[in-house]
Amino acid sequence: MSTAVTPTVNSLELEVTGTCQATCEHCLASSGPSGTDGTMTAADWRRVIDQAADHGVKLVQFIGGEPTLYRDLPALVEHAVARALTVEIYSNLIHVRPAMWDVFSLPGIILGTSYYSDRADEHEQITKVRGSYRRTRANIATAVQRGIPLRAGIVRVLPGQRVEQAEAELRSLGVQRIGVDHARPFGRAAADTAPDPSQLCGRCTRGRAAVLPDGSVTGCVMSRAWPAGNVHQQPLDIILTGRGWADIVGMVPEPTGGACQPDDSGDCDPANTPACLPSYPAVPAPALEVTA
Image (cartoon, rainbow, N blue to C red; front, side, top):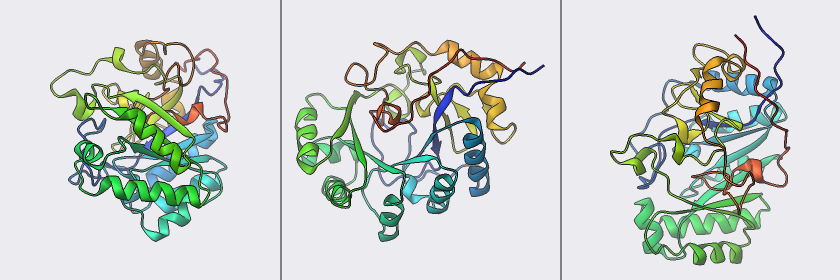
C-alpha cells in the first residue's frame, strides 16, 4: 500500500566517475587515475536527473573523482539545467579544458573546489600532484574573474596545516563562500578502520542523497557503506520513500548545532554543503513517510 510522500531530499550528489588526477590521502571515494566510471551510463544519469526533478530535488551536484574527466558531463549539466535544476560542479580545478569554462558559465551553475594551503608544498603533499597548487589557484582566479559563482572547501588533513592562511588567500582571490572541516575516516582516510556512521556530519539523508557510479543510492558520498537501494533496480523515488531509506535515516546521527557553518560545516569533503548557501532553495524537511 502506498501513501502520498512529500519530498524530503532537495539536494542530490551524482558521483559520475571514480577517475581523478589526484590521489588525496583523505579521499572519501579512494579515487585516482585508475578509477572508472562504474556501471552508470550517460542514459542512466539522464534518467536519474529526470527522476530527481520529478521527486522535487532542487539542486544536483556533479562530483567524483574529478567530474570534468567524465566525457558526458557537459551534456548531463545541460540536461539538468533544462530540467530547471540548480547545478554544482565540484572540481579540483587542476586542469580545466577550454570548453569546460563554457559549461561553468551556464546560468544556474555553481562551481565548487577544494583548497588546502597557501603553500604549494603543503597543498601538493595532500593532493599528490606536482603543480596542483599553482593550477588550482590560477583557475580559481579565472572563475572569479569570469563571475562564476564559486565556493571552496578546506579540509584539515595534516597536523599544523595552514588552514587559516589558505582561507585568507582564497578571500584575497575574491572567494567569499568558504567552508572548513576536518578529514573524516571514510574512503582512503579510513585506512583499516571500519566505517562508522557516528563520524558523519549528520547531513546525510536530511535533505540530501547521493547516487554512486554503480547506481547505489546513499545518504551522501561519505555514507557509501550503507546503500538504501540501486537505481539500476528501482526508480529513485521508490528508493527515497522506501524502508531501506528510512533505516539509514534512523542510523545517521543528528547534525550538531542544527545549523550550517560555522556551527557545522554542513558537509565533510567537500566542506560547506550547497544546502547552506544563501541562494539555495530551502525546502523544510517534513516527517518521513514510507511506502510499504
